[in-house]
Image 1 (cartoon, helix red, strand yellow):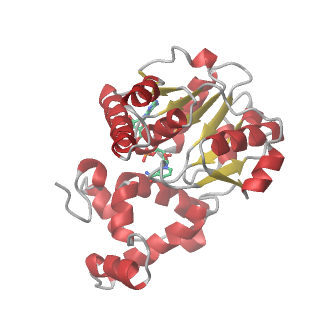
Image 2 (cartoon, helix red, strand yellow):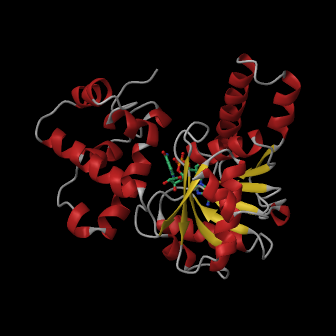
Image 3 (cartoon, protein in one colour):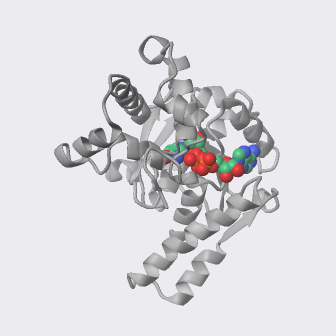
Length: 295
Ligand code: NAD
């Protein structure tokens, strides 16, 4: 795959300056990874609390690199100053590429993307980190859909190698090549996939979550399921812990997109455990209230 990415991006420059819209679990992780790999990045959110959390996470990851002896204090300071938190769009006219990582809600994303397009240069690439919403649907609000595609990172961004690069109906080949070059520069393995709800990975993952919910309805204990997946199947974590890491609010929104996209396979006429946890405000690790307990 790395060889193929190299061939497709021969002579294609990765962005020299980038921006991230949304400083949550994913936006913060993407900003860190950009900076770590030498691409200065603006990180915009509508909440200063989210920006502070995003910066704290980046410092934590850099301090880990320091402890491991991978960098010295000077390099740490240099990298951290290349992440610029902001509540407005100042500096966005200078960026070559932006990845949008706001909440998984089609309307919120469309409003944010349309606004963003008005703040960047006509040649700036815009990518969405959406987990499930078809890229062509998001592109419907844009003036330049050819400059737009999906760029789906996985959580935690600094550890997970895969990036799904999603080709929308109107995405140009030049945009795909630039985003592949960007993902490669970030040390990731980009894989180009076609557009549909959930793309490739979440078309596999959400039926797995649906199976998990069904087992709980049948009386299974989530702790036992996690234990079986970890100890017997050798997976890094089971579904309950994975949902806690992903964010149960994000999973709830994404599940609604999958149900609308694949009504015969994913629709259900009852509220499942993901809906119940969402209604109870248990969003997982992000608010220290999930399936599992976090201090
Ligand atoms: P999150 O809830 O942690 O963060 C979302 C951030 O977006 C918040 O900080 C919020 O303040 C901000 N925001 C909301 N509206 C905004 C706007 N108009 N402009 C700027 N910022 C705005 O969510 P997350 O888990 O980081 O997910 C973000 C995106 O990444 C979603 O599309 C999600 O589906 C996708 N994604 C999530 C995961 C995961 O495991 N959590 C994995 C892959 C992709």
